[in-house]
Amino acid sequence: MIRFAAGVVAVSMFVFHAVPVQAIQPGKTVTWETPMGKVVFDGKNHADAKVGCLDCHSKIFKMKKGSTKFTMADINAGKFCGKCHNGTRAFATNDKDNCEICHKKK
Image (cartoon, rainbow, N blue to C red; front, top):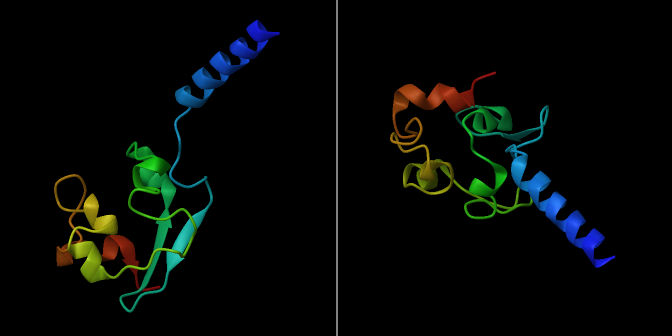
């Protein structure tokens, strides 16, 4: 019985570590209404860039949707999305040419 349990644990560890974690499940989004237009976060872009859920949750964002409050000033100061969107790792949020990447007028 102990051998069986150890085998189950070993197989489980392999399966859970071998499967990439996506930022948001396919077809799921998070949306914010902002004065600059709607921002829709679709995890596919981040998953395609090899960014997994635990890269941001709960290090940068709390796990519960809507529980983290932030402003564009926070992001431009390198907090929240700005931790990566700093012009080095990903496009810079403080470059006005990049606003429309996230903020959609319609």
